[in-house]
Length: 120
Length: 109
Image (cartoon, rainbow over all chains, first blue to last red; front, side, top):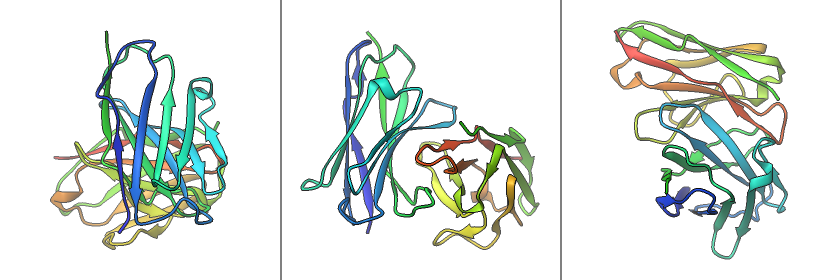
């Protein structure tokens, strides 16, 4: 059974760095073809893809946020970590991690999401 | 960057009716790289359709996808109360980047 679960702080201050962890089970990020992405969603807004890490440690970022994002994995812990620097004072945003197991890029399993508020 | 535009923004229908949701891409996308998701309030999106027309595991056959090039459609043949939600299309044509449409809210009339 594949599961993913996001964790991280519920509140961060503007300009601080946000660190989120995706802990997964039911698959390995060492298996060829496996990929994990981070996606965010503001309330009532569309989904926005942020970053992806692949089984071979290739990393990809949204072109608009590339300068502020970093993604990494710890295969021994079955975790993927996303850091986002210089957070803007925006409303609450939900961050999801999701798995891709196909070259065709769709997300077949999602975490439940974690809500982050950026406020002083 | 490939932009996906979904229409209508909101669709008001009654249970039992047929729903047709549109997703238009700013440039041609291989059909293999187009997916549809359903999202209910407070929940993560759920994969419905991949490869433009393939139902994901456990998805009822009243959901179907079609289209090619820049125009794609999600059809729900007979709406059930559980189908009222927000629907998103997603493309992976400019891999490794991907993007989502802005969503269609399917609401009960």
